[in-house]
Image 1: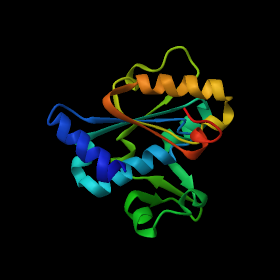
Image 2: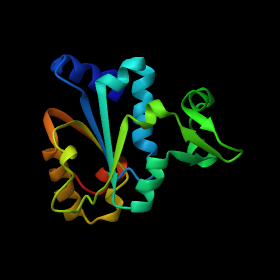
Image 3: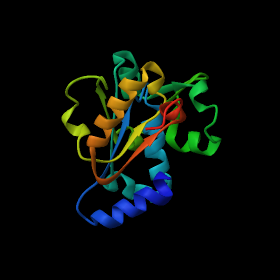
Image 4: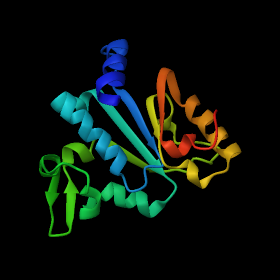
Length: 172
């Protein structure tokens, strides 16, 4: 959806006006935003750095620090094709790999609480917001309020991408 539909459409619409902005809310230890950066790099090659800006945030300070470090155990690679693992990660030892610098520098991480009154300044005016597997921690009223606030972060014509846990047990 992102690389085949949304990115081409949004890049065509904005022309040379700047980078397409993508936000991952509730990013935990960074696998989602780094995966987004890898998918964009696979589709757009070296120009991905120039075309896309990826921000990410999570309430868990330790998770954000782990994301910034970009070092992952074998468990994080369980579904990643081996060719991509070799292309975008450096093996540190039998257990750990580090994200490639070209991908690492494309993602900025923030400690941020989705329930906070104010979001980080660079969270505003996004083309795409990912909000996946976070709603399980909140009641229906809170989920609805969060999704309204996330919609307000989008540019006109932007896309809010949610996961199954964000849509279970409700229809809003």
